Image 1 (cartoon, rainbow, N blue to C red):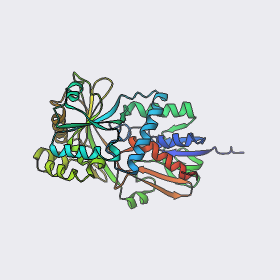
Image 2 (tube, rainbow, N blue to C red):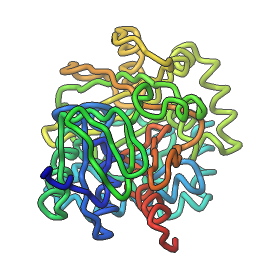
Image 3 (cartoon, one colour):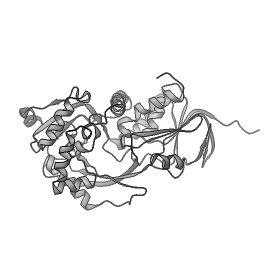
Image 4 (cartoon, helix red, strand yellow):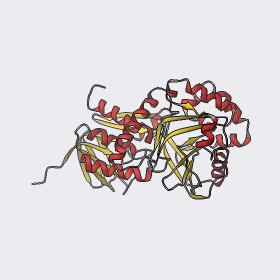
Length: 377
């Protein structure tokens, strides 16, 4: 007689941050969870980023609330999983009067609660590495982990503390209610959550097409450790016309017009560059990034784009240190924060389409599991 196939409570396809967030939400509900991934380890968008759990500047409303909740979950699970939080907070530095107006307007919103402008003497004392800005707003809400370390440690903790099973090197060919076809055979589960990121050719390509999902390619750099340490991650004027929490404010229109009238800033905007600088435990800096969109972006990094990123860095922090590493990444991109679809009963397709997986996935997963399991929100 053939053995009865193992049936899992919940199978999750994808071991990036979106998949791991859903594994945590399911395990906390007492589900027996299996996570599948086609690669030997996570190597996509989940590790090719800043590791910056960004709350401040997220789009007002639902996305901001998701980011607030996700940051709280990160702060809870990081020490349990042995994940260092290497930086906390965010400094937003304004070098143009129009950017200063955006800071002041943001501080008056609900999202600006607990944020405050730093006085000149405090800036000079604690942020001597900055090219002196006109104004700076500090937020306590954000935190940063080292993505390439955090993702495998999170997976290891889910296995050790919550009994989550991981099966790497497993390609999923088809998903239907209660059933998954893989290169290792058929698997069965009461609930299935598919988190494939920007891979739209394998599973549910019609839903990707319907949502208008394409790919965003980014470029990032790691710079050698300078002789100082950033008290927190830092952003500049370019970020205020990209992050919707700032960019949607009426005052941002004047800042955008000012930037578009400056040749260097206009070139940066054309490449989707908004400067973020964060610092790792070893002192090195991660800076970026750029944004270009295509169904299949080319795999090549542009020296001209790197030069524009470094020019934006120089405006904020002076002469950049030596470049130690360069890389590109891609993620699924479409209008809106994410898509959650039900292609079959008890099956959910979940794709974050805004580049905010690290910042919002934990809370998004809670919403998905609440709905999938018929719980009261």
